[in-house]
Image 1 (cartoon, rainbow, N blue to C red):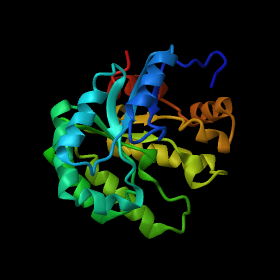
Image 2 (image 1 turned 120 degrees about the vertical axis):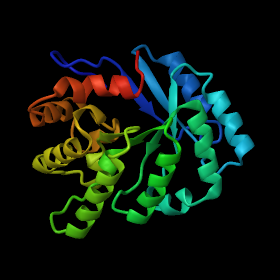
Image 3 (image 1 turned 90 degrees about the vertical axis):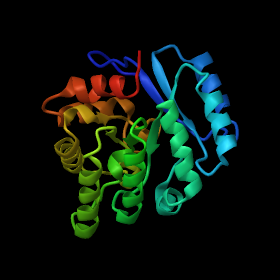
Image 4 (image 1 turned 45 degrees about the horizontal axis):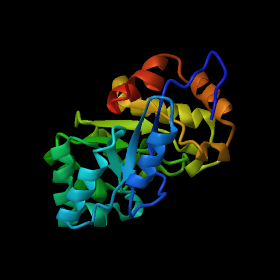
Length: 242
């Protein structure tokens, strides 16, 4: 992972890679021993753990200086998980620690977004970061999906403790269209304003579609303004990168 001038990597955010979900601190421990650039890390977490076990795990994770939050991949289980009383209680613990939570789920699932909305409203000290632009539609023919996705993002954007991260295009279509990418980013900026939108790479999965260098060149060519905020300042702020 490297860039050539005038592009540079000032720092990064590591989102849990599932190295050891039973003992997620081992992944963090390795990172803090191995990485030189300024960085922050998001640890794996199991939102379904009993409250005592969940609290103990969070207590351990926050002893690592890089940890600013956690992620339980919700995906298609979002409605089931967010409806769970156990999960809702564990969000209260995240709120007490004022941690970030990475929200990875399809925002076209309006029932799940309804549950998420209540959790966000009840946990205002958690910073919720929407992953992969909320999993937008890739086909113009998917009108109903797009309408649900946009309406859900519009609803969630009303909460000021929510930001959105645009990445993961290769997860939806490895030959994604650059005009589509630009359109999704612009829609996110319209909904959240420029200071709550971050552009990231989803490295190493980015390499399914193009080189790391080519990816960032494409992104920069797409952004006509606010490049410093979208590519640097916002991530530094939301993830508390030194």
